[in-house]
Image (cartoon, rainbow, N blue to C red):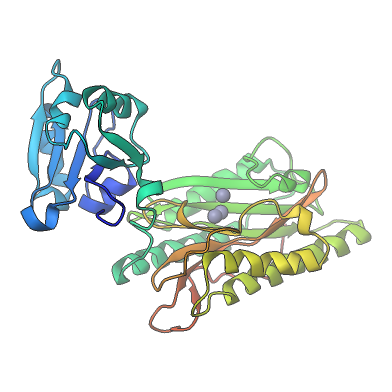
Length: 364
Ligand code: ZN
Ligand code: ZN
Ligand code: ZN
C-alpha cells in the first residue's frame, strides 16, 4: 500500500474480502459491508469492518474477522458517512473491484477530497502469488475439473444440444466437489469460432469439433480448463484433416506457452511463445485473445499473459495458458491448463494443475 501511495484499502464483499478475512456474507445486498485496512496497519494493528447491524453475527463465518474493530450501522443511518469517519479525508484509497457503484459514489459524496482508485490498478498483485495451501487448493480444483472432463468424454454428444452437454458438465463438476460452477461453455461446429459462446440450442453433429471450457470454485479456489473434442462419424475427409492439423498447432502452441515459464521470463513471454507457433502455422490472425489470466479465489484475475505485460513471473503465480484458433463460420480449437510457476518440484519451470490428455479425443 505504501509503495502504491495509498492511505488504505477499502474492501467490500467479493474475492478480496474472502482472501483477506475468509468472510463471504450469506447474502450480498445493497447494505454496505466494508473492510477498512489502513496503510498504518503494521504500526497500529487496527483495521475495521463497517457492517450492517443485523449482519454483525454473520461475521463469525469469517475466521479473519476476529481481530477487526467492528463498526455496525443501523438502517436509516448514512452508512457512507459512518465509513467516512474511519478514513483520511485527503488520502487515496484502493477500492476492491467488486464494490457496487452505489457505494463508491456514496463514499465520494461523503469524502469529496478523497481519491478512490481500483484495487486492480493500484495493487494488481495483491492475490497473485499463491502460498502452498492455495496451490494445493488450486491443484485439487484442477484435478476435479479433469475428472469432470473424463466423465463428459463418456456422454453422447451427437444428436444432443450444446446445453444438454453443458448441464452434464455442471453436474460432473459438482459431483467432483465444486461448490460453484462459473461457466460450462460447449461450442460446437461453427460456434467454436466464438471464444466465449454460451452453450445454446444447436444440436451437435457427427464430425463437429466441440470446444469445452469449464470451471468454478472448489473449497474457495478456482478451476478453468479447456479441451477440444471431435465428434466421431464425420465423413468430410478434407475437413477432418484440417481439424486435426489445427488442433495439433494449438496443442504445440499451448506446450510452447507452458515451456516459456523459465527463470527471468515475463508474463508477455508466455503469450509471445504461444502466439509464435500459431503465427508460423499461418493462423496468427485467428488467435484473437490473450494467452492467459491469473486464477485464485476467482477464475479470472491478474496477472494477464498478454503483450505489454512485462511483469516478471514469480514463484507461486498460478495462471492459465490457453491459446486458440477460431475460424469464423467453421470451427474453433482451444486448449487450456492452469499452471503454477516455479513450484518446489519444478524450480525452473511450470507445473500443470490440469493433467487430462491434450491429444484430440473422439466422442460419441
Ligand atoms: Zn475466458
Ligand atoms: Zn477457460
Ligand atoms: Zn481461462
